[in-house]
Image (cartoon, rainbow, N blue to C red):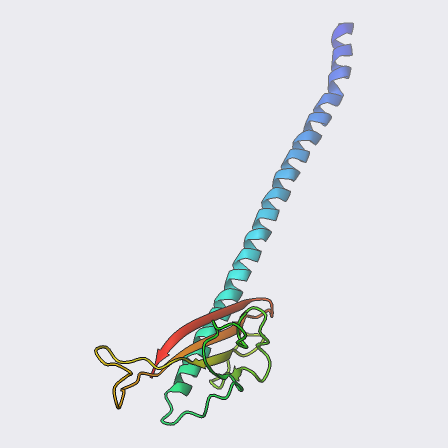
Length: 173
């Protein structure tokens, strides 16, 4: 009988150690799960912010296209968001869209209804491209029919100023 009592005393501390190890493992699993949830919440928040910026950019694109629908357009003097020529030409003011100062007077401000939740209103640049001849015509004729083409580029921001969406389209007038 003495042996049995001695064994019970040695086993009594093992249960505590096993229980503490199980609690440690469960804690680690809980921490890993909460970190995954936090990461998913951040990703969802970033996606929502980008969608807000994208919708603002679409609104800015519609606003700039409406500007091009005027009967008489103001001259394209390389100011106020109206530029003559192609941004692909070296030395052009808009060679690098990422380094451009979108908040300056070099861009055209958004003039539509307020967009809720954005950190800044969208801004656009309209470039008048070279005229093209309609299908079947030539620009070399005496009175060439011309199709005027414009490149419209809009940049918009989401709720945080770090989220940016940029859209570009070619507009025929």
